[in-house]
Image (cartoon, rainbow, N blue to C red; front, side):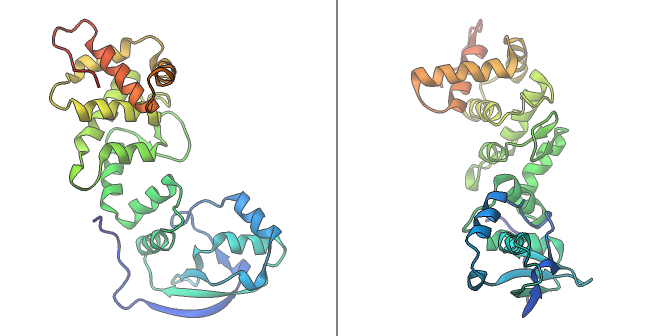
Length: 266
């Protein structure tokens, strides 16, 4: 099990009432606001159903929301920022401990993959930290927006890295290296489906595949990653399965072309 930044053995908590507009958000330990959720709460506003808001009281007195930000925002957007809400207040938490508590409190309503990953890195989650180190070691950055040098596909990164006894950091490292060497640090090369497809091939043929040959052949494949993705969608319609698996099949076909010793079909 991954380790996280644990709460202090004797963390002090209190029950207090605070104005809604006195509670603040810090996206280092929170997810982004989902406007649709706020609007839904506004339309069905029930003051008796606001419930308890979990916050962290920092040394400077700032009250940071760890659970309940959408309810608080709905109150403020309805012009009720002065409404006093009941708060379960944690005292003396570090930033990593706040992030760890956020993840615990929001386990039943999973955070978006990017939000959960970023909080995991901050909280010291071993898997998140290891993946982030590999990504940054490749000259990339995990980000919530698509762009050159940015990897938004957190789910793909975690799937390639693996979990439990099947953790394979070298597969993730090689996957990123292959994509970058073949197509550069472009947004197309870092697409989640493309990375997952490469990861499937490298995970399946760990010993057999010649990485320099694979890189050279992928780089020469007409149309680059967009064409590979388009061809995979067509193959999926014919053979079924996932797009990522279709990408992997096409990569194997591309790799085998002209080789005497070929990889078996995926």
